[in-house]
Amino acid sequence: AQSVTQLDSHVSVSEGTPVLLRCNYSSSYSPSLFWYVQHPNKGLQLLLKYTSAATLVKGINGFEAEFKKSETSFHLTKPSAHMSDAAEYFCVVSDRGAAGNKLTFGGGTRVLVKP
Amino acid sequence: DGGITQSPKYLFRKEGQNVTLSCEQNLNHDAMYWYRQDPGQGLRLIYYSQIVNDFQKGDIAEGYSVSREKKESFPLTVTSAQKNPTAFYLCASSMGQMRETQYFGPGTRLLVL
Image (cartoon, rainbow over all chains, first blue to last red; front, top):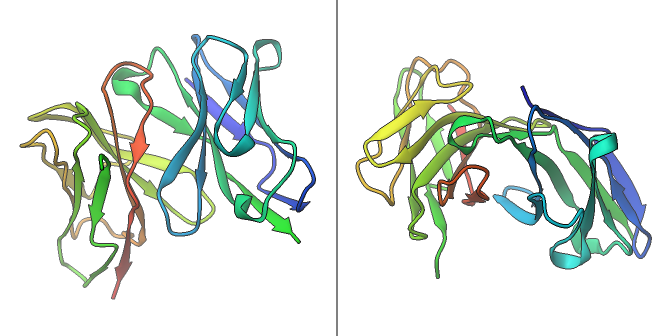
């Protein structure tokens, strides 16, 4: 069975400083991994995805994530936070063994950006 | 513009009432999904459909029903058997291949009167 753990439920950063959101996963096979962002009362927007190509994945809005198989991690980073980055972020795993492309979601990390 | 639409944005349900949430996509995706989101939690899968006229239960299907009569539409009915329906409901779609990216609609918030 696959699972995802987001290590921080809340992260607070100052505008212009780096953001780090931590994610660990477990998977029986070679997983695909995603980060989605959700602004209040909105749907989820795809930030980036890893599908066994380059381990450093660049996404939209300056975000990137690094897949580390030895650590079973897929942490999300951004060098400089912007006020518009305040949202909830979900780390998601999709396992080769899961029928019908079922995704497993982490519990989410809420990001607060202080001016 | 291609995308996924959900309606209504807000829906109120009375005790004992069935309500239906709409999900339409014009992305020509084969697979569609319904998720439930509760405050402070990740998404949980209710039902999914990989092809027209076929669907499977997800992790929390009790008290819900779906149909897939058309490729672009996947309505979700919240029945009176669902005793705790208050949540944010999200519809998604994908091309249908294994591990393919899912794209999400804007969501419907269901509240109980």
